Image 1: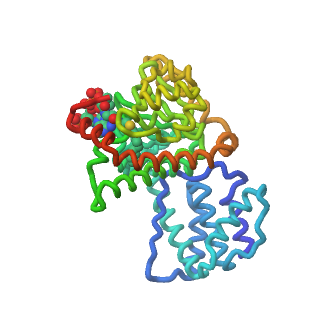
Image 2: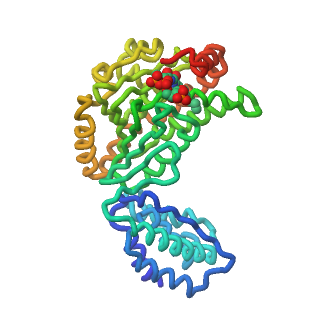
Image 3: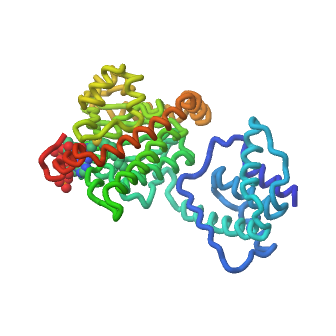
Length: 393
Ligand SMILES: CCCCCC/C=C/C(=O)SCCNC(=O)CCNC(=O)[C@H](O)C(C)(C)COP(=O)(O)OP(=O)(O)OC[C@H]1O[C@@H](n2cnc3c(N)ncnc32)[C@H](O)[C@@H]1OP(=O)(O)O
């Protein structure tokens, strides 16, 4: 049995963890009242061998850990060294099961294999080469193809303003992209605006605790949202063909977003106009990247930059003519996506890690200041003016 376990582990844990998982394998652990028998467990082990599609490393680790727990009980191996990546990942997965009873682990293994068989069977009906389109997003379109996960903001009639649902969906999509088998992730917008920033109607839905509670909830949400960008482990590219307002022109988040813009794009952070203050770590990153004086023009006076100006200031990586924008960008993205994913992730990590703690601290401070700003007359008047059609940016 131990030998079989090892073979399974070998089979399910290939020599590199670079392919992390399939993006949309949803595991529905279907707990039945019945306990899985030894026979069910053995059947499940056989079924695993018959799976036609690789379920991804994350699932394989889960299978491995449940198998070990079901057959040997809690993790009893010495912890492998940090450089022994594969055995360390296996050990972590097994150890994470703590004192889960053997019977429960056996049942979970059986449930997992059964849900896996059905989900992979249905995904194998998708035509080869077809985009794996995400389902269940209301405000985004997420696709994964050729090693590139594309997250497209999809509220074009509202100029891709970020409502509360979109904040949550972007965070969800980023978390999923961080674990899927793509090498790079692209953020883009559908329609004639990359984004018009925060949806100003977010301010109108006041909870029972009043505006103070609203502001507090907003600060918690924004902090989590920006935190997802700071922590995002893979190369992230913002591809903007059209104007961007507010949040998403804070492209230097985490120092690790490459930004491609068409010569039609503009970048605008009108925080003062709205009675607000900088967010997305821009109060820290913009002055470092651009120079304090230029950052002041943008963040304090709300100066709108053309793509060419933003590129000259170092906020944008490269600008292309609008007519060839998509072709130019996608040629680059496809080439990047062929680079070794682990090397890219590690390179990003080493660039970002020196600043990560600082960025989280800046994010926390910016959100706390904004929480106060949202309660100010200046901010409330600006929102009312927009909503009553008295002003536009
Ligand atoms: C958790 C909270 C975190 C908050 C963090 C702090 C964030 C700060 C920011 O994001 S600052 C930026 C805020 N954005 C704005 O102030 C932009 C407001 N919009 C505009 O000024 C204009 O709409 C425009 C210049 C973007 C585009 O103008 P135009 O081309 O003339 O289009 P319309 O104005 O007709 O817009 C079409 C449609 O979209 C709605 N809409 C556009 N932007 C927003 C928005 N930010 N919030 C809500 N709704 C927006 C607009 O109302 C129209 O809707 P309608 O067709 O009338 O139903």
